[in-house]
Length: 123
Length: 110
Image 1: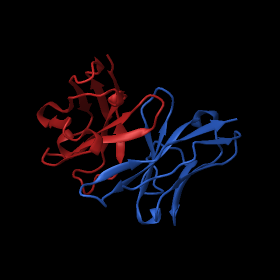
Image 2: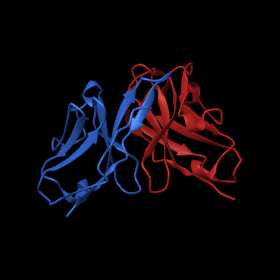
Image 3: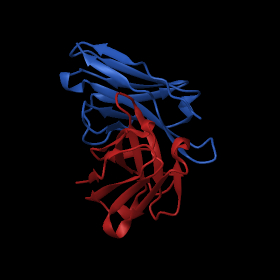
Image 4: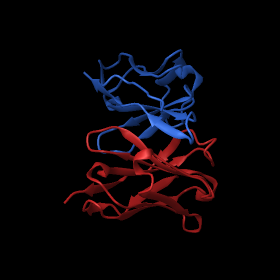
């Protein structure tokens, strides 16, 4: 069965950096695009970043462009999100989500989600 | 960017039918997907491409999309259906794709 397990969350000061990871199992990661989606405390879902199956295309929500970098290691079945210049408004649970497609043109929904990792930006 | 509007809350008695709307400009031209999120849990896909159901989702869940409104319908509502529900579309109208969520609707089972 498909499993996505996030890790690496924690408390970081404003301006700091953090890398969160997502270990995938139960499917061939190399065949699917992947996303990060976040949820601030008491708020709704917000898409953050996309990476296609081979890592050649990446997209970001405007609020994290230039600060966050999504990447993947298909040989290790792992997805990453490197976050820098963190702000208090980046505080959220970060979910790893699998796409049903492989690239930006056919990846229209999220068919499996991890349980998330908490990132708190606070001094 | 594309905006999806959902009512903040919907209440329904057990055994009755719940309808959760998702409004967007000419949303019928887009495919709408729905997620259920129970407290402290990850979201779960319940409807994709307007009306298709993953095999693990009960037949009581259905979807439709017309004009400016998409609707998630839950028949014979059970206490276990109490959750937040989010609609989502893929929008390609800007310089790159965006995955847009509605604000979410809290379903309360009375």
